[in-house]
Amino acid sequence: MGKNGSEVILIDDESIDGTEECAKSIASRSNRTIRIIKGTRPPPGWTGKLWALQQ
Image (cartoon, rainbow, N blue to C red; front, side, top):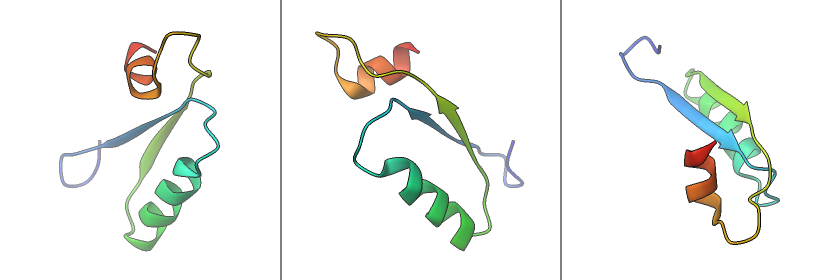
């Protein structure tokens, strides 16, 4: 857990929007850590956020 009692967790669902790179950059500039969990693309009928939460 982070030094302030919070933790940032990002589920990488293989999207191409640059979220992972953006989050890493923000974490680096703010001297914070982020946990990135490698997921899979959403199957048909699932949306990105709901699939990330399911994983």
